Image 1 (cartoon, rainbow, N blue to C red):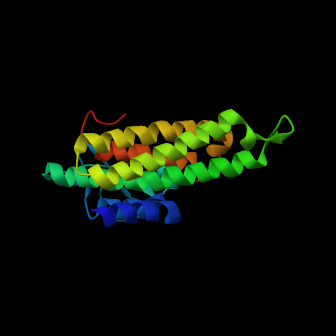
Image 2: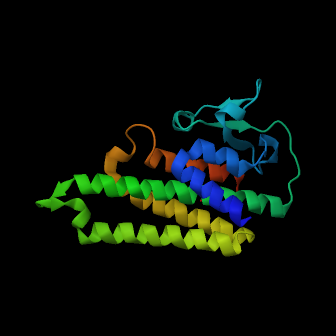
Length: 197
């Protein structure tokens, strides 16, 4: 499982969310989702499948589809899938943090780069600590459902804090904060009912 988690994180960080999603799902189809909707790479959606429109997701190459049936998935399989999605989100959050650093380094406030402000540096440091904590937690406890859900929650909170540092620029155009938002929605489709936040 360790290799799968590291691969999902790496692909998400270097090749983007859609590529990482295909790897994280590891062949899971919409009928394996615990709820009524599943998030799949757009190119994995077959003909005749009902797609729920979502512009941000479409921009990221993700489609939200309605289940047509129900396939039983063991708790261990579901937890492993959720752990791979969390690892993918680690890569996406790391990418978002890098974008925030670049953005803040280019902005000036009070005659100096915004990146030099103590509160900004603290927020970026907190994000880095969370990313590393989640990464390590997944590697040692990625087979524990409650721990994996907590990892997703911590990433959601961190993504929000990083998006605030970007301001409106984080949502302009593809990538960055909108990718993190779609990653959260995607995870919510695959986490057990009531677990998403």
